[in-house]
Amino acid sequence: MDKLIIEARINEYAGRGQNPNVPWNPEEIAEAATQCREAGASIVHFHARSKDGGPEHDVAVYADIIRRIKARSDILIHPTLGAFANDGDASQRIQPILDLAKDPETRPHFAPLDMGTTNIDAYNSATKSFRSDEVVYTNTTKTLLYFAEQLQAVAVRPYASLWNVGFTRQFLAFLKMGAIAEPAFACLIMTGDDLPSAHPGTEQGLDAHTMFIPDDRNIQWTAMNHGGDLLALAPKIIGEGGHVSIGLGDWPYLELGTPTNAEIVVHVAEVARSQGREIADPAEAAAMLGVQV
Ligand code: ZN
Image 1 (tube, rainbow, N blue to C red):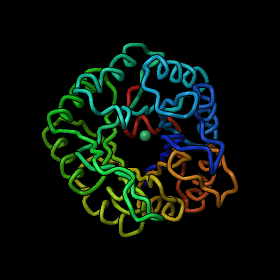
Image 2 (image 1 turned 120 degrees about the vertical axis):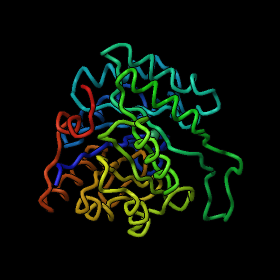
Image 3 (image 1 turned 90 degrees about the vertical axis):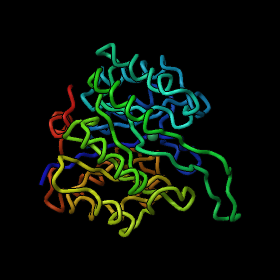
Image 4 (image 1 turned 60 degrees about the vertical axis):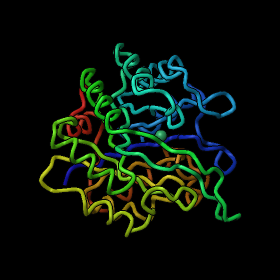
């Protein structure tokens, strides 16, 4: 079995109410990335955050963060496109990644391609109501083909985010037509009860994803659970040859105390080793995923 790739999903737009170790500013993000690399992660996924933790879309801040990360470790870099920066046209949405890719010091290794359109309204199970009711994450086929072509041109690998089986089928169509090159990297998205748009973070939710990942394609898959606890599923994911995308961006992981992102990575690495699976370093992960470092 391939070595395990651990992707540290260090912050998303998580608050600090339950776990204060969520990194927000560039220095905190770079430090978390460095610690996660030492703990066994080979990819870091991050969102730039403003001083008060809100979304930050300034490309200069992304450049600052990536420079700081690259200055101290070889961890592979996966910034967001900006989940809420989706109201621009396709060229505006991808431009920050293309700008970052021009300079070796700021070039990311991955950019996310969410392979379809979905509602992303949060549900409040306490009040049995939605917090919003018109938030749509729009990714037309034309936009996705354009993103894939642009990323290919600057040698940034697409990170295919698959919210459900329809997304998987769209992803497979892109592979068949050559719009996404193999080896391809896909993230099987599961979500907690507060975001019912993806598969649930259960064995059945995972199985319903993996049964549609074909064996006759060169695909490496990872799995995440946003708004839910992935640890219970980690042995199953690791045992089935998947990779693990986990961190404080998704869940506070208070069963480990008040862990840092690196402490969560250490825990996943221990689970993997106990199952006899070795951990990939960034160079090994890059080779498995067709990443140009
Ligand atoms: Zn993200």
